[in-house]
Image (tube, rainbow, N blue to C red; front, side, top):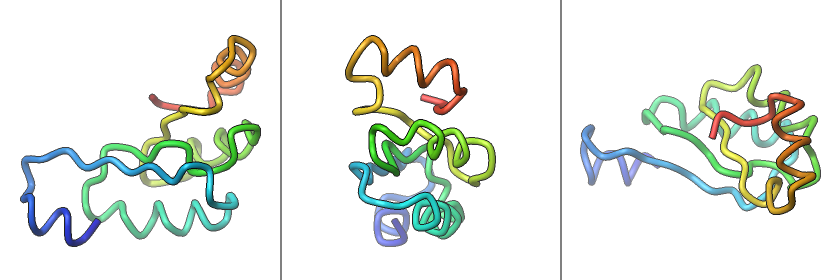
Amino acid sequence: MRAAREGLGPDVRLRGDANGAWSVAEAFEALEAVAVFDVEYVEQPVAADDIAGLAELRRHAAVRIAADESVATGQGLVDVLAAGAADV
């Protein structure tokens, strides 16, 4: 993110996609670290079925949370919305 922000400047929106690779603790640490680079959001920071983890991150992380694989089904969408688990 640092290299992207430095290379692209302040007028370009930066977004990340973790592809569900992090635990909630890892995601929180990573989101706090990239927040200083004015990241618009990070997509799917935790596993798709970890709706509670997404919701926790949304409540406490410094970067907005996007859902992708979590909303691949109608039920997933319902679950994410009900839990308030994503900003995007």
